[in-house]
Length: 244
Image 1 (tube, rainbow, N blue to C red):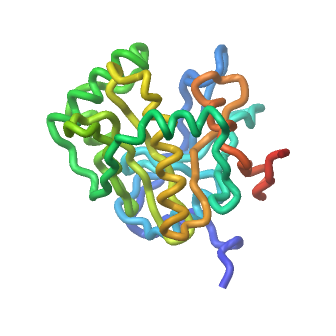
Image 2 (image 1 turned 30 degrees about the horizontal axis):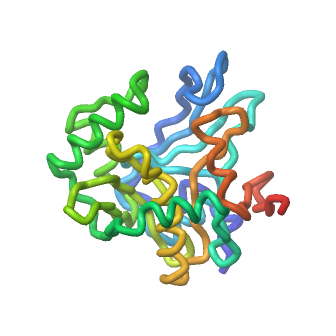
């Protein structure tokens, strides 16, 4: 039975609390107010979360949310159709540069090593972010989840941690929640390498779509997502393929 007529609260399920609307200064575009509709959830099935993503809903910790900004629709969900993806020349160079990187997949587990990398990453990449760098903030932000999640670690041949991805997973999709990396190894472009590796993981596991969250035109920290082609954008409730 299709789920297009099933309400969002029904998909989220009984283990949730509606949090209403929350407004704050926009993190992506200057001089704008952002508004999100949110729910606190404890358990959402992978199939239901896939359907929720197809309605523009994302996850942060145990919070499910979607944008509800007045007069603005710049946050557009974006995904990569795995079977059709082909890396660009520059992306192939990143793959070659990181041919020695070892990738491992496990259940998410916060360790002092990961916390140390995260603190350095936040200081180097997002020094003005309101996100706390302490262990409790990191645990709430990335290591608490109401859906099925995995952690992907990237290490050099000596075992040094280069980067970490948190992804949500179902039979029909893998969703990138967040990636952080060792800033001293920025020349490796581990962030790019992680996306390419995770798309390839989807290909091997026969998962048809890799979700990249929101794409925001005009926001330099979000526009990189359009470099993974072809991509699809969720417009008026329907996925539309990008131009070639």
